[in-house]
Image (tube, rainbow, N blue to C red; front, side, top):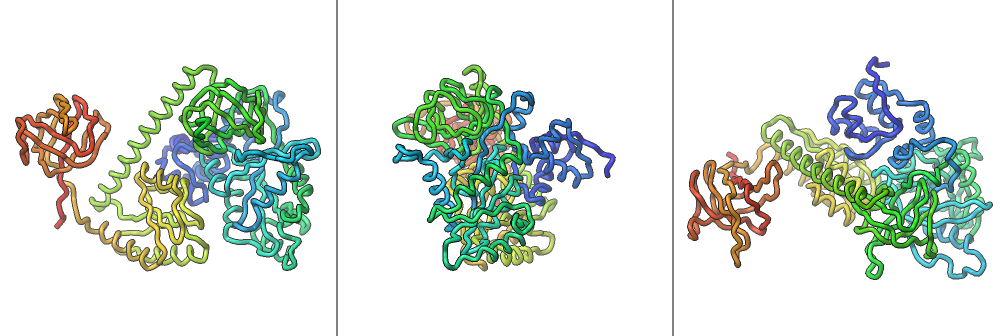
Length: 589
């Protein structure tokens, strides 16, 4: 064991872990990726993950306290748990378990959720649940169980990636007539990464071609050995269509919940997770929240990510008004100023001033992080051109495992000379926000084969400067990569700085917009050049020079010491004191 020891709490942000070890956050993230953990620089990981990564850097990780060690042993330590670590043991009470249902498409996830809902519809409530809010509760043996009705693996992973508790228990739906499929394996990987117990719902056992023993054998090969085979995995035969086995499944959920000791303090700090959010034309911003500690009340001031507001109304999963909501209760709320993202942690603040200050700090931190990421990306290209770094990093997503393996193999063989092609992560499924976050952190290109990039992922990629490329033919994929490699070996264009100008005054011209009255302080400014506008150290514009004038006359260039008017193409937020940097792109020899 190494003599280098570091103390780590039950949960720690990646940036802080890197700082404790004295290593680069990007190197820390790369180590985590090799261990199957996808996180960003400002996301939290549990003690287990931090300890494994620390060991790979030659450190021995020790917990900060015995209490935190006990908390760590129960599973993943999400961000919300860290925030309520100060709750007194005597104030904690048992709360309902939170369950999410995962599995392969067409194996009956939706049908099973419907069967569970219908089994709970009380007499006289023929209408049942009147609206979809992404979560609901059922009663069994006088106890409540909360089900997250979010769509599949993407939402589950998004919540976990942001430090939220996606669920306490995962119910894995596997069809008895179809067996383990690629998405089943993916669901198992997600559940294991979240360190939550898995209960298998063996669905469609009523079908004539059902083969439960064959499916159990497949599960055993994936280290989910059924309890009736002497293993630790509860396997419950069900038929969502015939409403068979639903009671047994709910009983199994309560038994597993008892074994993992799920508790919260209803009188403590109010904190929880955003399940989903939307903009309703009639009601404004509506968000579904899952309370995880404390009791949320009407009139509370809530911050979720960068959304803030005083709650105007609370509704339960049936649409009935509520005055308050305790731990493990899903609640739909009105009053936030913006739609929060799924998986965001929400908290209650004592005053509107405190809440808005927190949001302002988060917005500023996000801005700083964005600038830092763009700078590091520019540094990377500079290193390519200087010959200091020659590596093309890729994240590959494919529709099925059968496509993924040959693509990874073929891409790995493209390395030539000083340039290495490195696949840092590969998986089946569509390109989601987590993939973009990973690509941004590792400065990688996202490759998709026979998959789609989700709308939210495309939007995030534009903001983070991540390149997404989609293909349906393998040779076109490899052909494009070969072209990229050649481009990296010998760049076609290089940047040539020309000069700088300081903005002395800003003039509003009716047909041209805002024109910067400048003095050229270095070199020259050219009409056909490209421009960057700096405000202090911040880059606020990058594009083309739209116009260049000297005493109302159009000119092609202006040299050092002269004054001129500069217009930037499609940009008018120019301020006195800004600096215009002019450059051109020249073909390399």
